Amino acid sequence: PKLKELGAKFVVVESGIETREQVLEFENLGADAFLIGTSLMKSQDPVKKLKELQGFWV
Image (cartoon, rainbow, N blue to C red; front, side, top):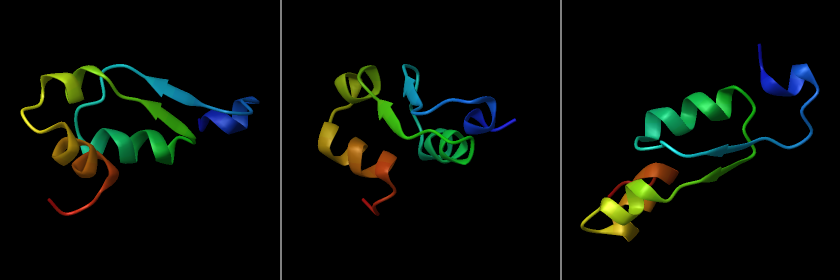
């Protein structure tokens, strides 16, 4: 079920997000925000990685 249907007011997804597909999956479940750290820290180009996760062409 979608998280908002279970009564959540504001949904933040934390940890383990590495791909745009994961972001889209959680958005479809009702996520409002994302805390992304490790995948940006491990990236050779954190700005490019963030744009990729946001869905911008890089």
